[in-house]
Length: 265
Ligand code: FES
Image (cartoon, rainbow, N blue to C red):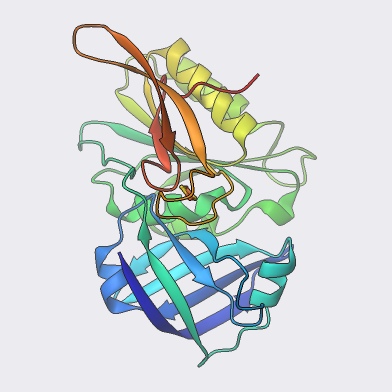
C-alpha cells in the first residue's frame, strides 16, 4: 500500500455521467491486483472530507485507470479535475482479490453498470478468454465492452429497457449459458449491485460452480480501522465445521467467495 501524489494524464467523459480518469502512478500500478481498489482524496473538497474508493479498472505501463460515475458531491467535484493536476491516492487496497483461474477453466465475468471496471483489469490477467455478461438499465450503462472484444472475449449485453442487447437481467443470459454448458469447467467473477451479486451467489450453489463476488460497502478508512464496512460470513473448515465471523470488506475483501456471504434479509 502506498500514498502517491499522482498526476492526471487523461480525464474524459464516456456517456451517461460516467468518466474515465488515468493517473501516472508507476509503483502503485505495478503493485495492483485485479479486484483491488484505491482511495482518492478529491482536492476540491474540504480537508475533512473522506477519501472516495474506486475499483482499479486498469494498471498497466505505470498508469492507473479508474472508471467512475458522477452521482454525488465527491464524484461531481472529481469531474472538474484537469489533466496535469496531482491527486493524492492511497492504494492498492484490499487483501481479498480475484484469484486467477487455471487455463482449463472458462472464466465468466458478470458486470452490472460500471461494475465492468475491475473486470477489464481481470480479463487482461486471466490465462484464458471467456464470456463477459454485462447488464445495465439502458444502453447508457453499457461501458467499455469494446475493450473486452478487442481482447477476444465473447460479450453478451443485457438492458432492462432492451435499448441494447437482450431485454432483461444479466442473470437470465448467465443462466442460459450455464444450462447450455453443464460439462464446461467454468468460474464466475462478478461486480455490480448487491441484488445481482446475491443472484449470482445463488447460481453458484445451484449450478455447482464457484463465483467470486466484489462487495461494495460504504468505506470510510479503507484500511480496516473503523469497522464501518463489516460483513458477516459463514466459513467452513476442512473438517466441515461451520463458523460465523464478521470481516471487513475494505481490508479482508472486497472479493468474497460464493457460499460464504451471509446476506441481510
Ligand atoms: Fe474502515 Fe473498513 S472502511 S474498517
